[in-house]
Length: 320
Ligand code: 5GP
Ligand code: MN
Ligand code: MN
Image (cartoon, rainbow, N blue to C red):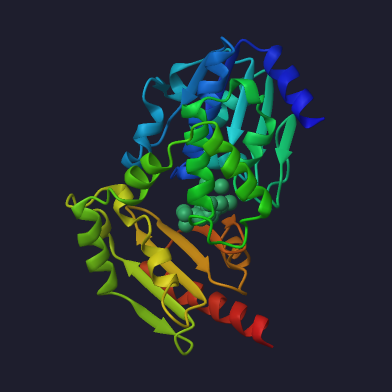
C-alpha cells in the first residue's frame, strides 16, 4: 500500500526536493544519495538539498549529484525529508521551502517521529531510513550505485550490524543489496578506513578529558570551544568519539559535549538497558533509545552537571 501511494505521489510531481538533516550522518546521506539517483532515473527534476557541510566520508556517494541550497530553489511539487524525526532537523531554510511545497513525504525510522508530512512512511522498528527506503523502491531501477548508497546507511546506523536494531530483515536486505552490486569494500574504505589524522589528534584531546561517574557506568567527555572550534580540527573530526567511550567495559551511558560559539551539542549513547532518548528529550532533543542528541544553551559546566544528574537518574530508575 505504502509503496503504491509513494509512487503515485512521485508520478504526480515533476520538481522534487530532497533534504538532508543538520549534522548529516551515513543513513541520512545514504538515503539522500539513493533516492536522488533513483528519481533521476525516472527523469524527475531532482533538487538534492544540502544546507549543512558535506562530510568527506560520504562524498563518494555524491559523485555526479549536483547539490543545492534551499535558498536557491522554489516552486517545489514534492518535498521529501529523510531520516528527520522532526521538521526542524532539516534546518530553517529547508523548512521554509518545505512549507511552500505542494506535497510532502517523510521517510524515517525514529520512534519520536509524530508524522508531520502529508504522507509519512515511518517504520519505528527499522534499522535505518535506508532500510525503509529500500522497501519502497522498485527493484528494476536499483543499480550498483543506489545499492551502495542504501547499504552505507544500513551499515552506519546498525554500527556495522552490531546493534539491536539489526533484524533478520536487515540482513536479508543487505544480502539483496550485494546481489544488486553494492560495493561493500568501497563503504569500508571510505567510511571506516579513511580517518583524517586531525580526527585522531582530536580523539587524543578528548580522551585526556574523559571522566567516569557512578562506578564507571557513565563516561563523559566535555570539549571546550578552544578545542572544538580550533582551526586544527574539522567539524566531522568529533564523529565517533561518543561510541569510542561507550565501548569501554562497564560503561552504560556515554555522553559527549561539544561546546560551540553559542551552544553545546550533546551526543548520548547507551550500551544495553538505558534509554538515552529520554535524557535527550529533557533537553528538547530526541533520537533513539540507544543513540540520541540535543542542543544545550548555557555554560559547559552547567551542561555537564545537569546532564549528568539526568543520566544518573536514568540508570538508577532502570536498576531499581
Ligand atoms: P548524534 O549523537 O549522532 O548527533 O545523534 C544521534 C541520534 O540522535 C541521531 O541519529 C538523531 O536521531 C538524534 N538526534 C541528535 N540530535 C538531535 C536533536 O537535536 N534533536 C532530535 N530530535 N534528535 C536528535
Ligand atoms: Mn540520522
Ligand atoms: Mn537513521
